[in-house]
Length: 299
Image (cartoon, rainbow, N blue to C red; front, side, top):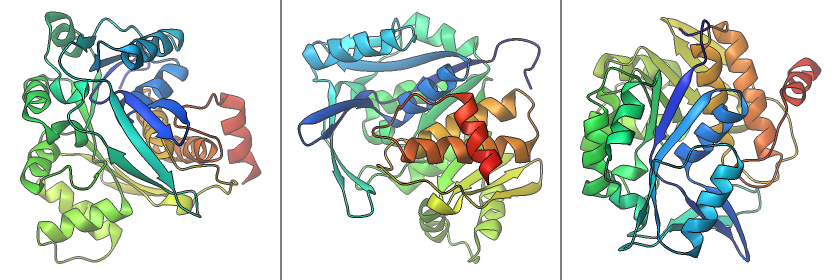
């Protein structure tokens, strides 16, 4: 789509602190996705809101340090910066307690944010930010632009509603699920099918999406792209924690596909990226292209 100039991407949604006991790490799925795209050389921006508090200032400082422009991360005097309490089970899989209300529930668009999306090649958004009608209204406005839209489903109980999910899917060109999310949503919409591949096609029939991706944890991922199915069976790493692995996977996949990499090559690259993030602490570890390439070559 865009190999002649630098790809421009913008993410809309939550920026927050993931709290692991006594330790905090910067996070939020859309922020994790856009930071990975930034690390891969994409011109990247984030639209969000933090509290006018020390946690908010620390996020602004951190995001600046990582090279993202923070002009469209607004500050709220009325709501605190988002916090998520993360609990890891024995297999290092994470569960989340997402505090409400947070500043990112109340994102209001300024002119700069609107312009940013109009002039971008791709808009990334998730479902969690739609738990509050203020942020949902802002997202609805952005979904009326002609930008290529990527919907990262990211179900977090109890913060979603099937009718809103349907609207979000119908606005998207590209939808990413994990296998459990795909199964749950397809059952909610009365899919007669049981396999991931059949249900990916079922989602295409319900929506205008031309691409669907489903992650399967350590077993890799499936990609339906241009009516062809591509598969990667995963790369083996020692898991540190699963936080942000799917987000970095998506950032790497979108970057590769929209800069005209072959779909199978893009999927392999994304699966290796996600695996390396799962093998590191927190949602945004530094990972080099050569590390990603080495993992692919080893397999």
